Length: 412
Image (cartoon, rainbow, N blue to C red; front, side, top):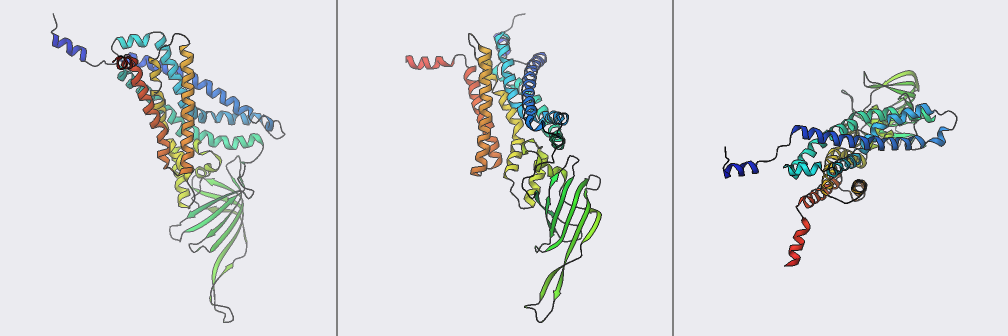
């Protein structure tokens, strides 16, 4: 049966449908290359972390075993940090290998367009994004929180303090049937068991008059009740007393102090929680977006600066899009052909692009802190710039012969 010219045109103009087997094949090749690069980089950084404290671990009271466990607990955070670079280099390597074996050429000859390849790469990149988010929002924060006391135990010291007087935090607490109170909390350190040591706080009323002073040897959080249990407590309360002495300069109120009370244990209700305190010991970029949001909300409610926390939160939100865009940047490399050394040249170019993207991202982060840019603007601009450059490069290399247009113009 002969086909009419109209049927032929309809058949030719019909868009190419990517077979499921082709998608599975591409996904397998890219995932294998990305996994290989990821394992190599994570192993390299783990080795650097392991030898970073060699001098300190040679001292008495330290333990290589606990430090090795702390390094292992830090691997999920390394996976999250290295994901964009590994995705870029792995994608470039896999696509270059397919191009070198003429598989991509055969697929394009069969009707696989640039748009179809881009859509297929986006679908594959979505899986990388999901895995990265799971590590960054679930596994890495839990592992990093467990690594902090483990690292302290390995090196034979409590968690380092920022100041000689310890850590200071502002806590605003409102009881259901009482006026709000502001507490200035100080504690010396945070031990391997998750306890606050040598805790002390001053409680003030809304008029900034002192109402209580508490000192405790340690404080342990009770997850069931949501309160802290203070041990070996020394408590002193303050109250107002009217002054009506005619010999006094003026009548009014004076603050009187009660006798010191010694208590074995005491329940302390506070907005502070181990999750919020994690921000004191864990870098913001290794906290989850939910932890950053709560920590920023807590600092804002206590009139404290949140610039670095808001920036880290914005970068967490934009991180999945950055991974998606950086894998799209790898597609133009599949269209470039060199006579020799193609794989090594393209992989090296991919490494340089990844390093450049990382530097631009850090540059905009510092500009956000110096020039007071909105956090989401600073976090989104590097990804937006990478998307524009990547799509421009993809359009250029996908043309039949871009330089021929220049020759035509030159000969006129």
